[in-house]
Image (tube, rainbow over all chains, first blue to last red; front, top):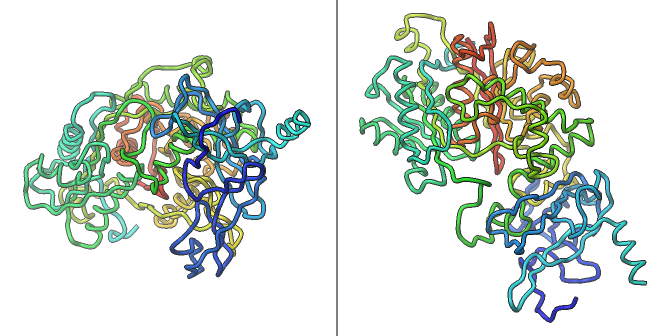
Length: 155
Length: 399
């Protein structure tokens, strides 16, 4: 981080701010064990369950790519695009323990050619957009292979 | 099929799709007038108006049924207005059908029309951090083509679909729509042109993603008894099923505008996917199966998505859609033509009108009036459609 800007989540309560090992914050129904992301707060989505109480739970930090694509054209508002616009990849990632698929942008520098169905990825925090004083953070997926390379480089 | 389970289609009408930039009401009225003319009924005979809403044209769009009724001249007809994303038109058809089957009216008019902005569909304005449709644009930059592309890539990896297959769908539909006067794009394209068009959301290219269009469509629906008396014949086009089912938990395919699928961790069973269940419910209601169908109009929001539909509506098993396409089965003249109208590929999407337009095409096909794109001898057709927030529809039409 070369900036002195304050780092804030782009949305409150959807993920932890642990820069080293962030996690998405989902809910787990205390009655049936159903997971949800974003968090369920009113009524369990399992139609066979009457549960109304939910524990906040950190979802698996790693998963495998279910499918992927990219955004070659700048998405419209309310997406806050950098100027000039830089295309990015998007992945839908399967979490084994939760038996669910969660979408996220893929970290900058990783394109569709670097991905395949089944690619192992992990969750990281990265800047979604910024203003003069703040960087607004969001979760992104990073291939584990890229992470290992970074670890080697850092070492 | 007994009379208390089906309704007759006496008239169908459309305002040509395009980017006309006029008020959506104008398109709806043109379509309604054509449908009434086909039916041989004056507006004053309509007892019930079912409007399909548009959410991008202000208040008149939210109460479309009343908007069209007022524009045609108040008659005291009862009215409803339905919004169900891409399935809005089918919901309006279903509202009219329910009134007729309940014996509450004999003659109903169904109308949907839209005027659309250029480019990607965007969420409704405002700063709304509790609306998943707003949030997916804000936090992910996920447009509708993002989701279409996820399905397309998955098809390639699981079933060996190729970019050439996706392009071939576009080439086929462009050819189908060439002589359809209501289609917006009436131009033959080659696979090379498709594959040379700019990538939008890998692996989908510009020519493979449906545009947003202006357009209007309408139907005149009546009870069977009224239709026989009015038309003086038993040889009628009828709507035998309207499926508007919601998904079943756990929904394990990522759907617009969601960030995640349901979790299957606590589920006792995982059933058919949403798109499969939409068509299954229609077949069950009509008491027929995919083998009885002569043609289909499916929601090709992308070229690749048309292939998913082949399987979801039961034209072939999972993973066999590419073979069906390559063998020419789904081309006019083939075993089971799909999107003889040219589909969304040639129309672009005018959301509230689109599911109605699919039924209009089936009506004209079954009557043998689809000049230049006729599926010979067609007796039974099915539509399939899906939109945001758990909406989808399938309508079965027969003669």
